[in-house]
Length: 352
DNA sequence: AATCCGGGGGT
DNA sequence: ACCCCAGGATT
Image (cartoon, rainbow, N blue to C red; front, side):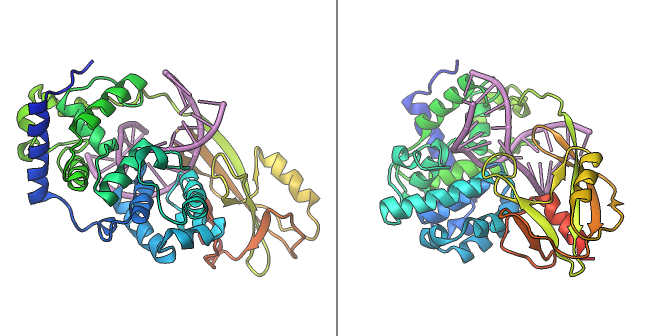
């Protein structure tokens, strides 16, 4: 168990971090301009499990289409998922939308001002709530994102994987201990900048780090050993056959997935567990059907398994009536629908 | 307390 | 091929 720092150590730590921030901190990120609770919330949500460079264009499009929480709350869910297409972790988008509606209906469009109240909203946890309070309101609140985890785990040589409860509890205690009463916004931004630019996962630049003098991992000569990696297990492989049904006018049949779970709420090609199951479905289709064209399978890897996708392209002479959840979609048109990355990829190929 | 949820960029 | 990233919800 890591011992808590003394008051003197805390002051040294904060001064070193803030002095460094004044000289080297980042000030030009899109979400640092006009730091409202809404913009901080959207950016923090996008940045969960997603890197800054990837997020920037998504953030720009999203805040242009939805400048305030009111436009977001008023939008159909498909519009929100559409702007999230390719970002992954689509539950984030659904929670964002639900949360916007709650903020508008319950709080008249103004975000709550305490960590506790914020963390009760869908999609906002302890860290994101702390980010909104400290960054948008400049009031004291700790965050514990990947950057802060890395800085603190190294500074105190905290053992264990941060996904373990005991390790997370230690890191949170340290994050709270160092969180200052003044310059809350600058401190939070400084810790994220430190983790993102110097205290990086590999090849940390300890030579320029303001905390190196008292960093235990640095003194051990092995900063990269902290935080400890997640214990890995091998991923199972799952084959799937996707039916790419296309009309003479190029439109394709897409099916809306259930609202929760993998790719929840997104539109996908009809999927089958085997080629035989897909062929059986073809026989049930009304109208003339071309011979199936079996495309080269490709792999889409998730956190926990490999999905081996076997696309089967079939041309259909005329559209048949479809269920409520199904739609005929023009692949070239960027319709307001949420699509998973492999679906977007195949639709692009179908326009050629 | 452990598991689930995407996709991309770096090495 | 493998690493993991500005986490939160669900079980």
